[in-house]
Amino acid sequence: MTEDDVGAVRFGISPLCELGLSIRAFRNPSWFPLQLGWLRRTEEARARLDERVLAGLLDDRLWTPDFLNPRPTSPLTRLDDEFRALAETPAEVFRDDLIAVHGHLPDVFAGPHERALHRIISTLRQLWETCFEPYWPRMRAVLEADIVFRGRQIAQSGVASMLNQLAPPRVEYEHGVVVVHLRDPAERTQAIDGEGLTLVPTMFTRRASAPVGDGPPMIMYSARGQGALWETERVANPAAVAAILGETRAALLTALADPASSTELGVRFGVSASAVNQHLRVLRDAGLLVSTRYGRSVLYLRSELGSALLATRIG
Image (cartoon, rainbow, N blue to C red; front, side, top):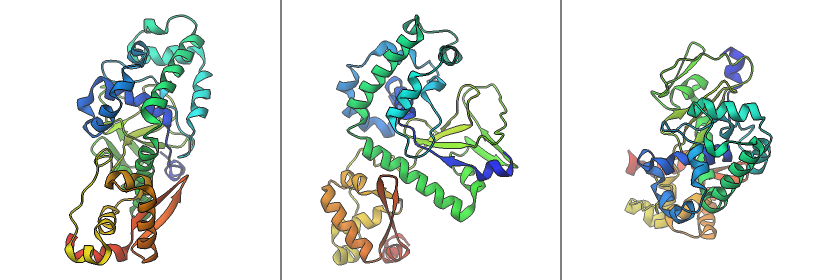
């Protein structure tokens, strides 16, 4: 990476990338314990998917073809736009990406590549509508909160420090070189050459992943904050703070050491969205929280005053 490349590091969220990588969790749930709640909730719907197509998109190493991992142009990438781009994948790219994963073209995708792409998109759209769409606001909130957190790291310590904390020890940065340690024993060196390095948080990689081929520079890394994603959270609050704020507001304040949206907090604490928003407004008006708009979401974070109020508990 040149100095200009370092300055051009950016983040993005890709719904299609999440769809493709989620197939890993179907094949090997033990690798993704933080997503077991989602796998349980979607088990019946997943049983109705085209298993041959899904199997053809994944090998025994849990690799997926690069056409399922497009580089997002922003944190606001729309799935319909990604599906349109996928439908226009050239035949040679489609074939080469699958051979790079499997070593051959899977039988399920033999024949005209347009027909195979149509079948893939139909299966992935069904996966989205039945297993992702009901939970996507909650999942997106975690991904967006991770990006906000990384932005704070850059502001406080710089890009190099952020990269070294992205997925240690899988990702390392030193002297202008980002090293990603993958399960693939082959070594590759790729110059960014002004293309920019895109960092993509995801729910479905253990630490870090990168494209199989020679596509645009991109690192997919495990998003923070997944631990409480599928469980209702119960926080034991200090009696003094709870007496001042009430149990629910004290719990929300305690949880907001990391950014989160009202949608995510409502599910985690078992409180309605309207009630959560009311509590958050009160805490923000009191100076205990700060908020920032991120795309279509508003993310909340504990302020210094809020942390000071809890200092007797966390100190």
